[in-house]
Amino acid sequence: MKSVRTIIGDREIVTVACSTCTREAARLMAARQIGALPILDGDRLAGIITERDILVRVVAADLAPASTPVAEIMSTELLVADIGEPCEACLHRMQEAHVRHLIVLDQGRLAGILSLRDLMAVDLDEKTETINLLNAYVS
Image (tube, rainbow, N blue to C red; front, side):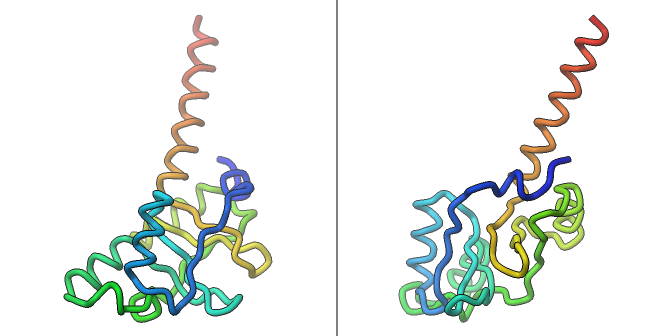
């Protein structure tokens, strides 16, 4: 399997500040069609917020999205990967922790975010390539 670096590539890193209201974070995720956002406190990675966090910790808790800062609902115990790690190690870690997003660090600095969908796409591409090679060999 490929390394995380090959998947992350030159993607833009979309983040929000701790003071950003939950409604604005949700709108940003909807506009960018992403399911999670790293949260920054200045230049420091402070946490992550996901669609599920907004649903469970804001909507279901009957909080006001316009006045609830992401810092109040973000997850701060972060599951991270190094940018040089193989994707299969990240996939295993995500499955063990029952999460769908993984923060990626490069020498301790935020390099991006990896989703389960990203890893499944890589896995599918590799399996398709193997099937094609085996079909060519049999033919």
